Length: 118
Figure 1 (cartoon, one colour):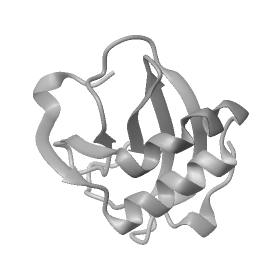
Figure 2 (spheres, one colour):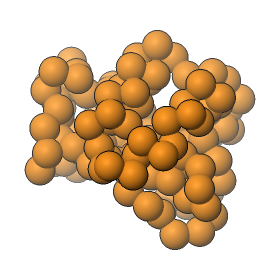
Figure 3 (cartoon, rainbow, N blue to C red):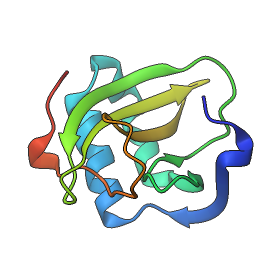
Figure 4 (cartoon, rainbow, N blue to C red):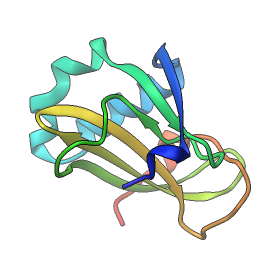
């Protein structure tokens, strides 16, 4: 779980790329992800990570995480990343995107066509 000091507050709708990735994760993730599908249209980004990764939060990170999807992919910058879609307390809470190689450079979302299970 991230430290709250590492978050940048936001209040915005999903970008089209974020929405496309989130929709893909929901349809290819764990079977229980479908129970959360109705929430996608209402999601707003409330914060993002300050490290340069594209991790975004939709609700405060309170409570244990339920993993709705967990995939591996490659960004347009050719960075290998993991993507985990979290839910907490019955709500989609976070789309975590992290560098597999622990790279310090900034990077974007993975290309959907590269996503696969670990």
